[in-house]
Amino acid sequence: MRKHLWCVTFSVLFLATTIVSWRSAGANKSDGKVNSTLNAKELFNQYVNNLYQAASLQQTGLAFDVFEKAVTGYTNLKLSHQLPQSSSVLTVVDFTKSSREKRMWIIDLFSKQLLLNTWVAHGQGSGDEMATSFSDRNDSHQSSLGFYLTDNVYMGKHGRSLHLDGLDEGFNSNARMRDIVVHGASYVGQSAINRKGYVGRSFGCPAVSPKVIDQVINTIKDKTVLFINGNDDTYNSKYLDETGPLNFIAADSTSFDLARL
Image 1 (tube, helix red, strand yellow):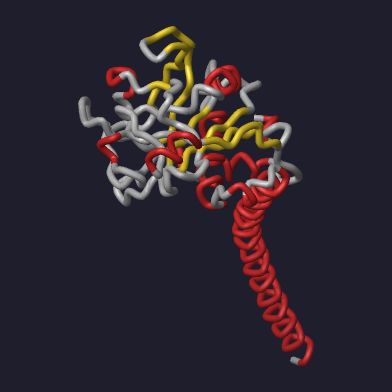
Image 2 (cartoon, rainbow, N blue to C red):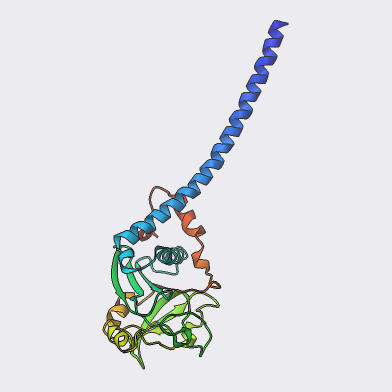
C-alpha cells in the first residue's frame, strides 16, 4: 500500500514538474521574441543616434526625430532595392524651420559626415517666411512633403538643374509633371535674407543658392534620397514603417550597418 502511494505521489509530482517546464519554456520563447524585437528597435535607435552624433547634426539644428524619419525611409528604400547599394547620401529638408535658417542637410551615411548645411526655398503658395501648407497639385506653387529620389541633371531655365521623382502617392508623386526640381536661385542666401528678412520663394522647387548649386547637384544626383519634412498632420508614408528595418536587424542582431544593405 505504501509502495503504491509513493508511486502515485511520484507520478503527480513528475506531471506537475513537466507542465511547469513546458510553461516556462513557452514563456521563454515568447520573451525571446519580445526581447528580439526590443533589441532590434534599440539597436536601430542606437545606430541612428550614433550617426546623428558623429555628423554633429544637433549642433547644426537638425532635430533628431526628423533625421530618424529620414533614415527610416532611406533604409526601407534600400531594403526594397529602389536604391543602388553604393548610394550613401541622404538629403534632409525641414520646412518646420524658418527660411532664415539653413534647413537643408546633405549627409553621407557611410562616412557619417555632414557634407553641406545650407538655405533652401519653399514654394510661394506654402507661406512667406514659414512654410505652413503643402500640396502636390499642379499650379499650387506649394512645396510637397515626403521622400524623393534624385535623377538626372539637365540644363533648364534656371541653368543646371536636377530632376526629382516623388515616391509618396498623393503627397509628391506629381513632382515630374509639376517640374519640381533642384535648381539655383538668386533669391536664396544670406544677401536675400538681408534684403527681405527671409529667403525668397519658388514655385514649389527646393531651390538653393547659385553659390552651392553645383556642389549640391554633384553630391546628390543619380538616385539618392531626399526627404522633405513639414508641419502637416495628414502626411503619411509607407517608407516610415519600421517593420522592414527591424525585421532585417532581428535576423542578425549582432550588428547593423547601412553599408551592408
